[in-house]
Image 1 (cartoon, rainbow, N blue to C red):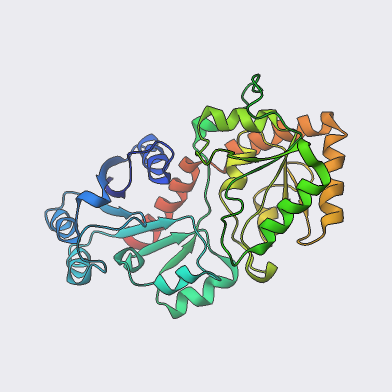
Image 2 (cartoon, rainbow, N blue to C red):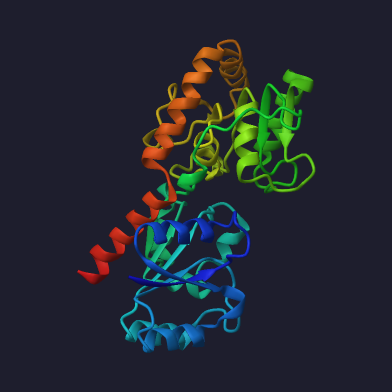
Length: 318
């Protein structure tokens, strides 16, 4: 299949790069098109000339007309399906007001990680939604050597947006304050200098930290079937993770074996789960190795893209 993939491909850590590489590995022919260098008019022309069999859209703005308008109808009339994929949650955040404005929302198949109770919302918005979580590139799913120069040395770590996270999610700041009070200098927040940590450095971080505490935006603490892709990035790189319990997350990994969970707001349980892993390095070691294998078996971008293509082929081409 010839896929015209519109997104950002200049940084190796962009999701579009991981997805495009996975599609390559699955035997597809991928044309990587920078979103800032194309337009809906050009995409319509590609479809009408039969230069591609599928148009794959990221959420990055396409130059020119925001909504696509008549160009999207031209693409549909050419019988070239459009697919979009986004890892964010929309429910409970101001960005929910943008749903439907950009042309990528009008794709024949819209895949996001925002599932569960959002299903009715997608129907009301006439978005042809399919739930598909994030993942990790297969070649980044490995156990690295511990870092030896002190860059990542700590007992307890948090990796990701910290104080400047969504103001709708005060919970993260509260958890970080709890961890700072309980573990003092044994706790560190990464990145410390504001620079993104990726690639082998991220693997080294997770191999060095004894325990990693995770978090994910969860409206009203009850919104199921959404969690950050950080869970795959952490477990696939061998991090020993303690994460809030979210409806559906147990379908991805086995709590108590691949990672630990605790109930939102139960700081006593959170501290107990962390301390138990700190006090039992043999169990933490088993958890690291099992998490890497579980991730490699079920949660790589190649597996996500294979599922996405299965849905498209089943519902459009057959």
